[in-house]
Image 1 (cartoon, rainbow, N blue to C red):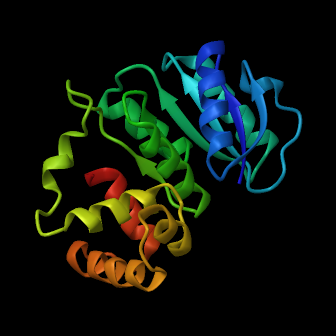
Image 2 (cartoon, rainbow, N blue to C red):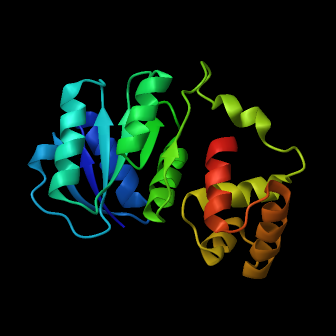
Length: 198
């Protein structure tokens, strides 16, 4: 999946570039502001780091949408959002991710957006964990949790099996058990659940 990274913070841009390029994503371009983007292929996701919620951010989002109708936008927010502002952004972009989330969570959000879903994460608690993480069912085994985490990163059954040193058929069995326990109908729903709960 091609990704365009937008951030005024050069250090963060480099970190995001490294993170995305070491995963299964293909980084297309890196920019200070969204207005610098001149062209994008279909399916490109714009990962936009925002440090405020003012008019400039809204203007950049509107211009991106006007210029590239099929663009998918993931906001990485450096500021705490009120419920009203989070709701407003949720209507304009495909995902809103607070900066305090883990790298795996960000990669998972990109994968879920790639698959056509929308996400809005809650603010993180003081310890950096999602406040809803305690909602995760305790009936998931340690192996099932590991498989769900790999699923969030966009790994195929074969990739997960190789990483964990187990058979691909075993991964399928664990995934079916996970689907049953968490009430998911497919991999994407399971990944979305895991991103929010694990």
